[in-house]
Length: 65
Image: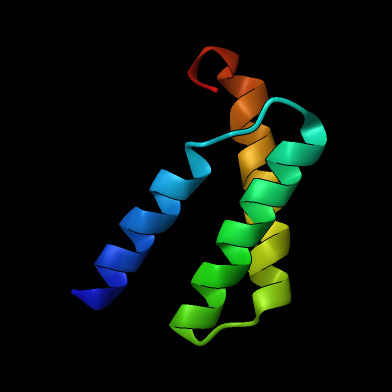
């Protein structure tokens, strides 16, 4: 149950896209690193995945950001 809560919180954090590419990368990277650390994974990998995922989402769905 804890994992599901963390994943939902991370998804909610990623929904706050940011207005610029830098903000999108920073927000996504922060959420990804935090989630990875809590789940016991590598925070650097989490940051990279989070940053890329947030930037991709915002580019594909600009009306949601």
